Image 1 (spheres, rainbow, N blue to C red):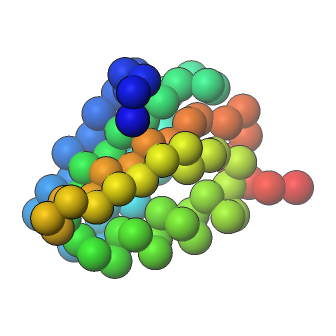
Image 2 (cartoon, one colour; image 1 turned 180 degrees about the vertical axis):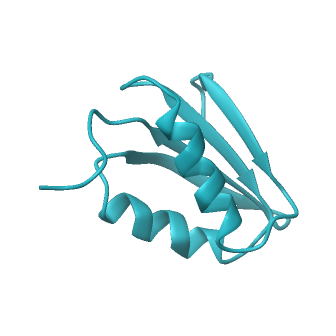
Length: 83
């Protein structure tokens, strides 16, 4: 991702569902439009983050996996739940 995140969360070593829960907490403390980068090592986080953005207004603007390290970039939305 070429854009610098406004906040970075290292959830390495945490098991499902902790990377997602920590990301939700981080997003709650951010302003709309800001970018959160999450680093995780739990393979289940790939599915968790995909499902999360389907049920929220936040946008998953990028994700990648390299050597068992998962990175996600989430853009904070104005609201939490989809209408």
